[in-house]
Length: 189
Image 1 (tube, rainbow, N blue to C red):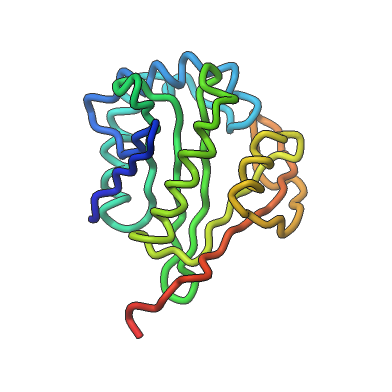
Image 2 (tube, rainbow, N blue to C red):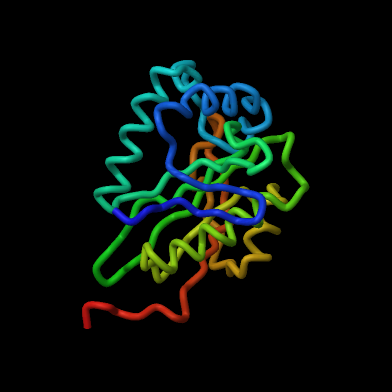
């Protein structure tokens, strides 16, 4: 596995280690009400160290197996504090070379350009070392912040899916977007 750590002027985006588990639990606990309208309903176990110990192990295994890259965002001014997530999941290889993008940010860091900075660097990593041709990201129609971030990064709206995902215990419509890599080269050809 290539080193998936990504750094920017203000951020470090990386796989979690077991030492990060308390910070991960704190991030999700502190932002529970803020993130709830945008995410699936979470069981109480989701907010425990035991759950995240297992997730850290599983995320590393999935990254090593080239199935996903689930990373946490750390601000360089507070290196031990999780301020967000960037996840590339459901890797499709072969003739597809694509994945899905999901992300989240702490309420305390919203409006400062952190998500745009993190995603710009993460997309470059997905198109570079991960060799993706296509990244798909979907958002709730009323989540204007998410739509604006994707638009600023060049994601194109491809459609609208009714009752697409079960978010916070309700089937929700989503705007479907994608970004393709115009410089993708088949290294196996």
